[in-house]
Amino acid sequence: MTRTGAFWAIVLKVLRWLCIIPLSYVAGIAFWLVTGYLMLFYPLLLSLASQVRIPPQTTVSFARIGFLLAGLCVFVSPLAVYAGFLTRKRVGLSFQWAFSGALLLLACFVWASDGKASKVAAHIAAIAGCLIVLVGVVFAFRLRRGTVQWGAGLLALFVFTVPIWLAWATAPAQPTAARRLWSVVLQHGTWQAMNTGSEFAARRQLVFAKDRIVAVFDTQYPTYEGKQPMSVYRLVSMNLSTGKIENTRELKGPWGAMPFLFATSDGHVVLSAAGGLQLLNSDLSQTGQTFAGGDAYDVSPDGRMLAVQTVPGIRLLNSNTLSATDIRFQDGTPTSVSADAVITDKISWNGKYPKGEAFVTVEDQGGQRLIFHGECGSRPSFLSNSRILLMGCGDMRLLDTQGQLVTLHKLDCCYAGFAGVSQDGQRFALHFSDEKGDPARLLYEQFVIYEANSLMPVAMVVPETLGERQSWSAFSPDGKYFVCGNPDGVSVYQLPGSP
Image 1 (cartoon, rainbow, N blue to C red):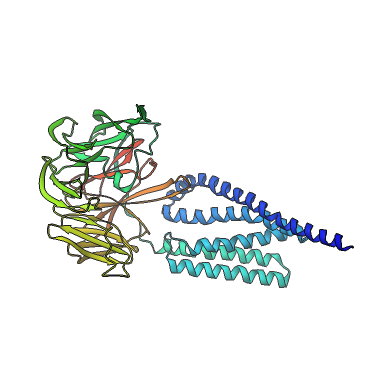
Image 2: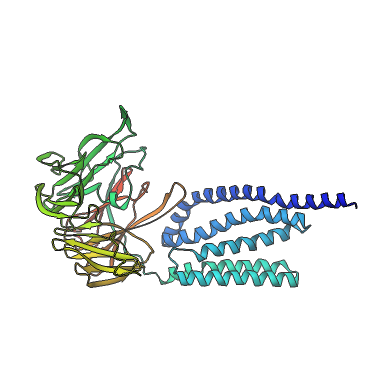
């Protein structure tokens, strides 16, 4: 062969190998499509698992491992087959190497897993699985037996799931399901993303008021008035015993400015909308008491004091009369308020504690003071005027307003959202969920009811219809009933220990 021929032969070989680059792009699209469409099987898997009492967290963890492995195999296989073609290897051998490569990539996911499995168990499983795959590759090469490599791969796959098995085996038994009394549909077929939102909003769209339950929601897509998109928001008052809608009321407001509801300690409802407050009876009629000085931000656990945003900071109102008090605070967006204090996790005390990652600060009439610092913690909430709930690092802590630990309880999940507390301070709820996709789509929801003094679970509520995001939730003042849902379905549950 001439030098010119040898040169072009080398160029041709390089170009043939460079074809892997566009092939990788196509394989990446295939991976995205496969993992996306496999999401459609989550509802079926969760339904089947619930029939044999497998927790949804466990089901989702197993499904993620399986679905991701399927996507990785789809991604790696074309590349391995093409590389095998260039090196004149058997197609079966190419798939064998593709499976091993997919498992090594899966190990990265297992290592970084932040689900129910502990970090230590996940790291051990990832390392052990990788070693098993590599040992299988070496022995398959030396013995020239592909079954060894396939067997090692299957063993590694089992090792990757060991942390999930351990988490399932050591998890406490699920609490008793609360008894559903009734359900009612408020509206069908309307885009619900504006109606179920964050942990913050989910506790402000549904309240108990004497013998009624009051809800507020967006009824339609926005229409423009000039350049301003406007929505029609509907208030409904439902009979606590039957679920029958007794009264309705509509109000127009800017799109995205969802009105909020707050339950008072004497059975009324505070409607916060368009920069002002109205005090309503349980049948949605007006009491004549209003406040025009700002939007309500939060209410104390006992329902007596309402926090209103001002510039700067917030001030407290008597929620039963909407009369202003002299109590003001610097923080304009605290995580929770009581009858005489606010708490926040946004103030950093790194100057005093440089290694701290999470801080809980109380502000009352005596000023601000740090009551907790540690490695992690999220959105502390008042359970009463003297007790604060803090979650983080797999723990639930019950603190007093001086930062003294009252009760500590392990939390069977990495993250949970606060879902409300009864006005008598005896019970509170946490929201557990998981989501997948872009935009994110809920896979499941659970509300777990806890005793406030012991932090022990007493009941579990699973909404019948999933919202776009977190479903609404509220307690009756005495903690005997719990309501949750969204416009597609609101349900009331009787909790254990209730007559």
